Image (cartoon, rainbow, N blue to C red):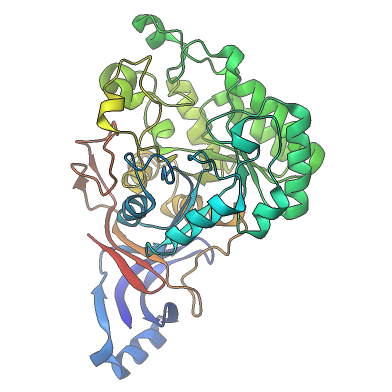
Length: 426
């Protein structure tokens, strides 16, 4: 058993924000408050005590957009190392993307990921691809993949340009009660991937990707979602205009959701000048005005989810010239700290709102029961110091491609507990 004493419980499911004791038994929360204290006294000799005074105790974080590169690219990351990075960041559940090698477009490959995930100590789920081989030409057997445990469907990394194909995918996903998550970048408007087509790209003599590449796709897909009633997620939103489009779609009644990443609400295109390829990502970091619109979208609920788009690459790959380096950064270990630094400390979001975006809302989008600190609920928890700082100087991930290396962040994770077991100690 575990006894968590005098922690500040912040639970976005119940709205509870108060100092409480928690008793964990057999992988579940046995009791909270005075009843937890009473039961602890009866079982003190068989119980490990975590003194949580001055720390936040919240439901385990949920990241519904990660790349663990397994199978096929395990020199970058594998399911074990990715899960270790997740646990260090306070995450107890992750959803992997399908762009592996082979692509997760068959029940066999999906089974491989899910079975390997079961050995990690956290909950590792996976989406399946929307189209076979991410080709954008032929739909996968969505029904077979759903029956095999797919959490949803996505061709993340590649936009689906065929409207008729996507319309059919949305209709089938709707029938299966699973979400479709979409990478929104029209290649017509990209003349150099990974960097915003703006002042910085001009300074570097680099073509860049303009916000229109995202905006036209988001507008199309919000209306397709409205037409079909499908649950659709706009992935890693970067454009202020796209935030407005999602806001309108929600007002119209579309079942549309949107993700924001810590890098998009923390950095702007200027970061490319400082961090080089470690600030190259798809979609790119954009202007200060775009960043402000993303924060506004998080504050008013237009953007429901904070995800990392954890994208590990080798040091050698990221040392290539800007035009040849792969896009993406790792993010699982810095996400909570950046959320507190960029959103909570300036007063844009309350800690409760941040926890909703990082646990409750992502779980609900993918049809999971959101974690809650209530008797009988699974004991998936994170304990962290909201004001306690730590230096980003090493990673549990195999990769180190992060612009935040060397930063000092708040929100030091002290414990991550999954199924009642401590899977990370800070």
